[in-house]
Amino acid sequence: MPNPTPVRRRASFVFLPPVVAATVGISLLVQGAFGQPNFELLEERAEQRELAGWVVPTLELTDYLYPRLATGFAGSEWVVVNKLRPLSPLDFEPQVREISSSESLDNSRGLELRDVAATALEAMASEMLFQGAGQMFVNSAYRSYEYQRELFVDKVDQYGEAEALVRSAKAGHSEHQTGLAVDVSVPAQGCAIMQCFGDTVAGKWIAENSWKFGYIVRYERDTTSITGYTYEPWHLRYVGIEIARTYANNGIHTLEDFWGFPAAENYPEIAESTID
Ligand SMILES: [Zn+2]
Image 1 (cartoon, protein in one colour):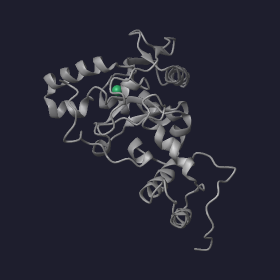
Image 2 (cartoon, protein in one colour; image 1 turned 30 degrees about the vertical axis):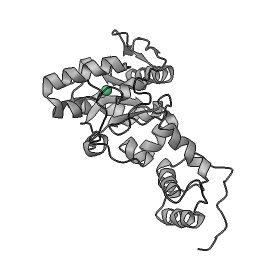
Image 3 (spheres, protein in one colour; image 1 turned 90 degrees about the horizontal axis):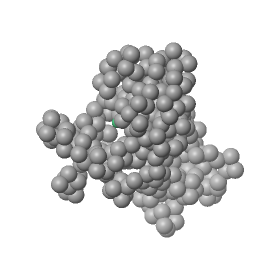
């Protein structure tokens, strides 16, 4: 090691790239985040990544601890919800507002999102129409714990439990309950809430441009073994522009990979039943 001195925070630090931060963070936690961090190992890893072409910020505990902790807060834009990470509390209720209908956005169902997510969606729809990719329709947005519970029970009745589990979330485990997730379509182009939406002009435009508005396509093709859900090109999750940009720039496909969380294909064996 050429430089064994402790890592110092650089003034120019920006919260990037979280994958590195997460990985380094895990190393720190494993080695005793509340004891003495192993700076030598940190530097060694950082050097390896630099050699591999990464731009590696210098990290201190506080640089990654807050972002990672925020992924556990139901009210955070960075919250990560999946089959292994229920919302806390399970019946969390965000503050939401109705998404504004306009020439570019049809919210005739009167659906709601958190203000940041609604504002971003309105801006995205406006740009989408402007670029000729169609008028967006809001199929689903905020769903309460109770509504999600009923929805899941309906899916079980309709498809059986195994199939219901990859098509819908149990209450307390749905991104829709955060008020940050929305299902959209462009009725004029067909394939509403179908996987072929990904091949429409609108679907392609969204996959390419949604990050500019702070959204990601949360359940991409071939990520079921990590996210636990089948491909849903219509399901957008607001994570904020900072995260969405980094996600897109680094070719990341799941929030689990982004933050370095374990794959969440299935619910834990011993899970509290949320459908009884
Ligand atoms: Zn959805």
